[in-house]
Length: 319
Length: 290
Image (tube, rainbow over all chains, first blue to last red; front, side, top):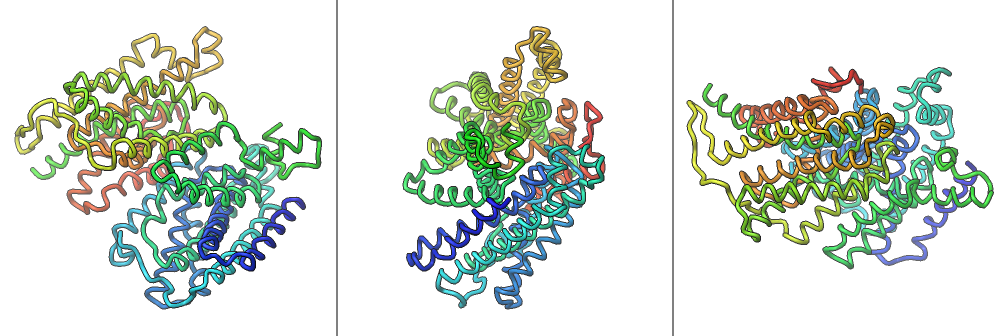
């Protein structure tokens, strides 16, 4: 718990110092994208890692957030500081609705239904031309505002700090511990008075809120939103980040987000082979690093008989 | 009314292929519990391999179909023995990630090898319409549909009439008891996966002979197959068939009367509805609740 907090604080300080050391716009862009993905991976991790249900519909919240911010900015001229929180709130409302239906399901059913919701939203975004402008998307979000990437970096770092603070408080709150109890053994948790639906719902809505914030930021940063934000390939990237870093830890998704962002970028050198290699790497991770990097580190620490591992969840799983 | 019958016929033709592909997935997802996101890629590979053997090896349609079945069967066998077997019994997540990785790999290797353009599979017979009362249907569609139905019966016979089939049913009822009774469960799992992969690939080749094969088609096929399996009920043979036909007809009617752009939304709406109203699916074999 303290170790996890200190690592996160250390990473935050390092990130805050980054713009002073780096002025290259391309590297700053990579840093912004890595932090954006870290927020997303963290928000998905609340559901996958702590509730223990595998959501493949997280892009639903990313997308509603992005579209909300884009519509508010393009049609009503809202500035970024107002549109991004609004995006988070709208996504949280969607989370409430979708969670009320999907969290009653478990296992493969939950996987497929969350995915169905994301697909339904993608198809609507693609076809409701009057509002979303269909496949052409909404361009010119927040135009004429910020030119310096360092400002965007500061904003995304602030958002990341906020979302990690919220997740930290949630994970180590009663509701967070209740969610972990349900994940480990649903019936025992119920027998001691934990309401599985309630604790899962809190995590789900919080995750949706954070994904919506990330989506709102994305709309302003890229200044364009199209139906691609709902696409499954986006979802796959986020999932890979969470599982590569190690689900059920707060540090894992950050590590995963940084590695995958850099990997996707530097594999570009290989051009057409890039995505094929990416697929192979994903398979290799599942086979050889089943608990992600954090799980691997936790196990190494245990083997040396060191201090307790990063998270009780990982400890139990690797025993 | 005539238009309605035509929509119904079109829907049934497409539904047969949905059913065939979903039958493959109901074995892999419903029985083996592998949430297989590479299923659409097996379908896609069926079409692409079919195009390759008919165009480059110069085979006719029917020997091409047999060769595709053999190639994709061995491929499915290898995927199970080398990949899926290592994560068996660890819950859904490793399987999901593994098959997502596999699907990314397969799509992009195929794109690299044959490019993104649609590929034509050689036709078995000359194109020409047949008139059945008010309904028009092309000969090729009718033939592909007949083959599809025959394959569904063949799969049913394999599962219910052969020794392999009884070994399968025993393994999925109780793997431990099955292996105690001398069934090599690893082989049975691999054979089931291979059968699922073959069914999907054959469905892909048959549809490619009507429309065309394309490297990027897999994602949507995976999703629709999941939809059909959930509609029909996990692991249910009649359910997969009824679900496939239902989805095909519903899409054709929606496309005909409501809006063509949003056809793909139907399946997802149906699946959300069915899980809210009847979580065990239309024809679940167990009274399993979602």
